[in-house]
Image (cartoon, rainbow over all chains, first blue to last red):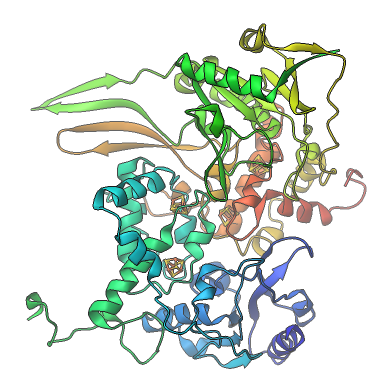
Length: 281
Length: 338
Ligand code: SF4
Ligand code: SF4
Ligand code: SF4
Ligand code: SF4
């Protein structure tokens, strides 16, 4: 599969179809896999594809440093393709400006498969320009994708509050969660507004609650559960639970799942006169 | 000849410190897969082996991520100010890695430069640091490249070196001697610490490479950087802070909060202009500060090779990779030690 990936990228670069390929690379064979930006055809040899390819590369599509390189091709797994759908729907990315190379994916994480991969429904990415590889992998029958949240909600409100206090206590406000998130693309994040200050920048419990809850709310009905924020948090905060609970609400109340289908209008950006809430009329 | 302590006796001693009201902090698993330096409530929480480097650093205990400088209360048209007293509760940092203790010694210079930072200094004076030598390292460690190593004593009051299920205890300062007085046993063995990571880069060569301010490498090698603070905030030597006012109509505080040169707001002017507007410029700043600016001013590099910046980086960047790339471009004559 890797040869096919490299060949596809080489052809795109050689033909001048794209100026850069956003891909996975590894500085040394035992080292960690990280994003790379390939601009020369011969450098496609640096591209890797393995169980350590966690990164959701679509986060780079909105970054000015990467945009300045010109037209891009990008490698996406099924879960990453979902965030691309949202980026297009939210007018952050012009779909025709990107060449999307989908990778058939049986899951990342070794020896243990990442949590999101165990319940994945998009092993074969959708909405891409070309798919490389194939897989029969499928989501387990009758799975509950919100099992974690349901389990957590069995706890009393006091216990849940105690859990979040303990988690948020550790937040150092490094904003790695924001940096890695493909859908945290705002030019000026609300936490960076300082005239006046909207959210305390202090890493106190108050400031940390305000930050993490606000970020979760801003991702309600948008988060595609790629899990990147949780993976990168240096304080090991279980952010996925917050996101999953809001995704669950979006599905329950609006039958909507972000990034699953480019044709379904985004729940946050849609007006529906039949809405069950009265305030909308 | 050496002085030693068994692991059991050390744990008992740690419990005594805690019992006596000393704040004790050390490496501990706060949850699955997350080892951090944290305040300990019992020696049972303390890790003495089986970890490389905690995800945070011991600077947390001298230079906390948030610190109130003063509080204010609004009473009608009057403002009442109340100074905060710097914390001077005795504290012991136990099982600190040598790259962390060395960092504290390096930070002393900047926090006592011109104005004394009372908050930092008082905590520092009230603290005793018990270092733990390293018997293993990972691919991110490069302490030996910046003049320290797995049993470097810089900044430590006591050095513990693993030996036969216990530790050799080297008391290096008066504070250290007081802490362990009467608690160690003489032994005819001395600990032998395995060699640390191989030398990966030379600070002199880095220093020379940094003269080329407009090196195109800053654009290419740092493209994947996401502009977060994960590297700076978990770095034992990064020490930048922001001063903020926080409060409401009745009162609030002025506080000193960690800040990072990697965040886009760091250099943003009130006019909206940002002199470091792209990530490559911010990466250059971090490296320049550590390997040129700080050494020029204080005589030593602002990096202890702990590797935390790479360990915690969402995209595995870290400073070491950049330093290696910088030097790879250099003509061979400038320092051969690579
Ligand atoms: S990545 Fe973690 S520590 Fe950093 S701001 Fe986000 S929640 Fe806080
Ligand atoms: S919030 Fe987290 S899980 Fe959701 S899209 Fe952003 S990075 Fe992915
Ligand atoms: S180097 Fe890594 S940790 Fe540092 S700002 Fe860039 S992405 Fe964040
Ligand atoms: S720059 Fe990186 S390696 Fe150097 S002290 Fe800071 S975290 Fe450690």
